Length: 101
Image (cartoon, rainbow, N blue to C red; front, side, top):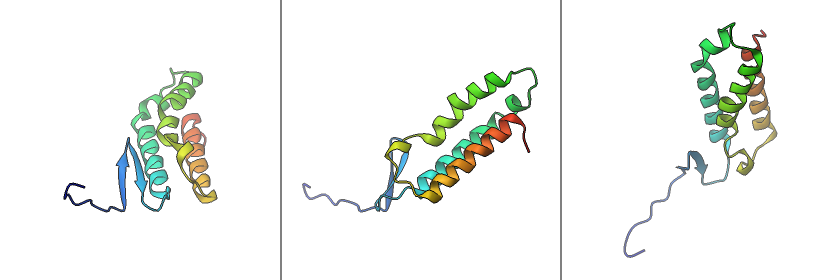
């Protein structure tokens, strides 16, 4: 294009989502799970606070944690293995929120 070289890359970030050239989403899903777990751990004081109701904690999870993990999930090509990892992360989040070991 007008004598400019076009770089060929294996993947790139677009609107906060990692896009791979093969169309796989494993790296993006692992990245989103990690971001969700980091967000959960960043709110550790809220989960331990006895003065905050369970309803409020649930609303915080639904408003602040789930969107981080599920961002652009409708455009991902997911395998059953990746779905299991997302489900396992969700269960970890709810166990942490509800203080279930």
